[in-house]
Amino acid sequence: MKSVLSSTARRGVPALNGCSSSSAWRYSIPCQRNYSSNAIIANRSDGLPGVDISKLSITKTTSPNKLSPPEKLIFGSTFTDHMLMMKWNTKDGWLSPSIIPFQNLSLNPASCVFHYAFECFEGMKAYKDKDGGVRLFRPHMNMARLNRSSKRIALPTVDEDATIKLISELVKLDSRFIPQARGYSLYLRPTMIGTQETLGVSAPNSAMLFVIASPVGPYYPTGFKAISLEATDYAVRAWPGGVGDKKLGANYAPCIVPQLKAAKNGHQQNLWLFGEEEFVTEVGTMNLFVALKNKETGQKELITAPLDGTILEGVTRDSVLSLARERLGPKGWAILERKLTMSEIAQASDEGRMIEVFGSGTAAIVSPVRTISWKGRTVDCGLKANEEAGPVALEMKNWIEGIQYGDEEHSWSVKI
Image (cartoon, rainbow, N blue to C red; front, side, top):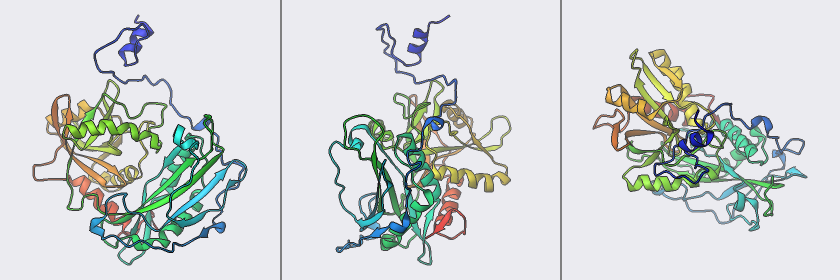
């Protein structure tokens, strides 16, 4: 029987006897239990005063910004006139919320957010419909995810409905920044940080939620442009029992160096592989969808990785799955959440069964993939030479945009 040491070293954990290996580490963790911290994490807001929207104060700017030409907008570089701010502590709970002119934060250098990454955030958008009305897209999913992220790192949670109303007040105040044109929106960034002034490592006794807003244009201003991915196995984005399913800032910084390496090799994003099996997980900061024909039955399948704790529970991912089940399922498609290996994708490509591959996320809705670089070869992802997007990605973009901009009345689109 193999020793635990030799087995552990083989699976990518450094051997304890000083032996080294020149081969790349393989990250494969045998899961013998369902990893979940939800049952053991207390809600730090329980028993304390919650968010009180009746106490909202609004201070308007005296020097409003000039609007940038829509075609000149660069993602995340232009900001509106105001921001929402709300503070919390373990004695008083949530203090009175305020909307104030956009400004720098004043924080003690010892604030725990700077030292131990007590920070999580959300990404959501507001849209103008053809009548000039303003809408949010599935904001309750964003607030629920913010609470899950906050709870995981011992930060307070918020009342979802009350916080959405506060964000809506900010959006209404700065609605002039939303261009009334297809593809344009107001990107909203709710951010929760720990603010306790200490170098000690413990649950923060104070925190802050702030929301800033940035007008943004279409992700693909001249139409879809299919991307190339580099299958990444030398670095791991997330692991069982970790925080890969939470929207923490600490999940993003470690991914930049692999992304730079992929760019140096001529690719736009990483395709994160996990384990010796090389399961596909996420693409860059997006969820991944693969459309192919079943080898045995020929049935069309739309596949994405399951919510096993290693991928982010994307709002767009959920939207694609829901619409696919509702609108593609009756056409004979199988909509599956299952583990999928890189070798399965390559085999489907080699056998002519690949239909298309795309990422999904708030920024682009869908991002078509042309090729994947894997083990020294290029895996074709089904697009024809003159195509930049497959039929499923195109339909999903049109369906979701139709809801976001109010062309189709849907419960996901919340008027403010």
